[in-house]
Length: 438
Image (cartoon, rainbow, N blue to C red; front, side):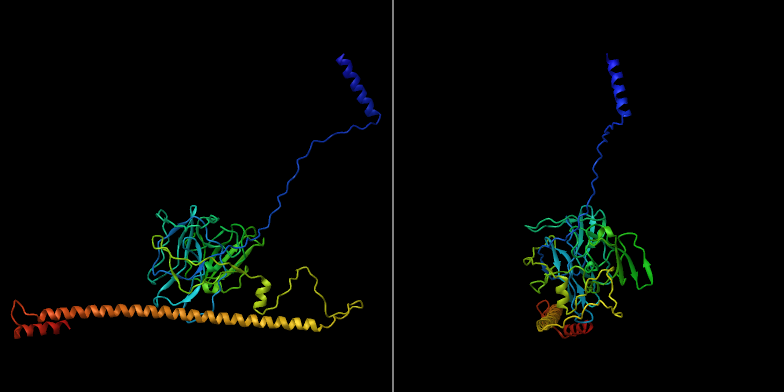
């Protein structure tokens, strides 16, 4: 029966095919293709920060270990140098129970031959090894914390929110440019000023690094390890692949190695550091010392490009695409558009108002710069007077102690010996000793 049924079914199908009937063939379901759409990085508004002037120590301080990376750099442009031997210090993230902004300022070295050492950041294990900036004699070199050294864990102030862990390779680094993703670090040779990244475009991923140092175009130091000292170079080269940049374009630029020159470059991200509320510097952080009262956090000033151009009295260049056609002004056309209508009185008034605002903004900027320079000069003079007074007091104290010792010795020599008065022979011997002592 089954054989007959199969034979009949086969014959029916054959007849249907021969008769031109179509049989629908259902293809298997194809898997749906998913395309990953890249999400553009949009910098979040920076949180308020504490901005202070710091009085650095006169020797290398001990290192501390912080569990999260310093934030991206802030813009802290230096005013004109007040005098020839002044040194630009500050303009970096320092530790005081949290990452606080050490505002930049011009100061005189504590001694004429003292050298300023930049702060030290190192990604070691899951933490950041930090050594604050300091003054030192020219004969003393900076010693990086050796591997295996027991480093004290940084004390976190109450209420501080833990930040992003360092994102990047192990080794010495400097903070990322302003507006970058939190946690990103920029590998750099030993001695690189943090201000090197202050004017650079922001990064969203790992990849930017201070790669090469150039020493007066005489020789090029190939950066093999992360311990090359760059204290004698004039420029550093910063490179980054396209995948690391917020703009999506590869980056390479030569930046001055000196902090004051790097900080003076026009910044890409207008994320300005707030000015300290007090001109009195606070002492450098001591993990085992007394706590220092910090001022309240301040909002970070983020100035749009248009406002920056307006305040600097500069015209804003139009954003023209590279593929935009360039009008030809040397030829005429029959169908040319009519000439533009002359500006009305209202437009002229608006233009005059804008010019007046630009002039006023320029005047206020010059006054602010002059006031800041005067305050800096007064601060430097106060520091010099304080040091001079301390040296004079120490010298006067030493002179007073020496005089007291001489008076005591003279009184002892003049006193009667063994209950008898001083004889002529004793007096002659005493005068001889005093003459030899002088």
